Length: 104
Image (cartoon, rainbow, N blue to C red; front, side, top):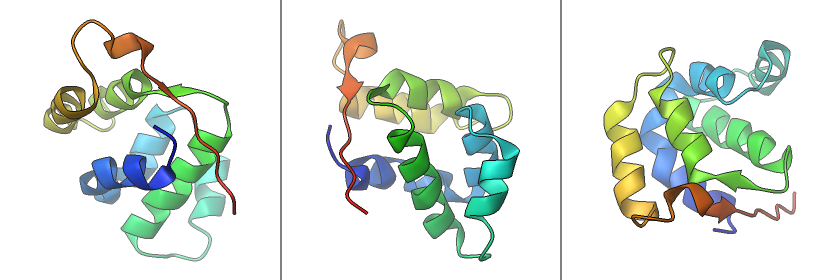
């Protein structure tokens, strides 16, 4: 995967829980608060949070995303299972690397 749009599209239903999802993904509360400084809609905040998360490392995995969705703060188990089915083939689930180049 090489586009923020694909990650964002897969996770759009997590928008209402973007802040806790960000915490589960290892983003600090200070950074999440700065993302929320303009009090935008949750879908925009989710996109900004994901862009930050993806930029913070050269590789990200769908496993990271699914673990974040399953975190007790987030609890989006069904979404995690759907992402596993749609984006991860059996046997290489943990090895799928998300490499993102974001030009902002």
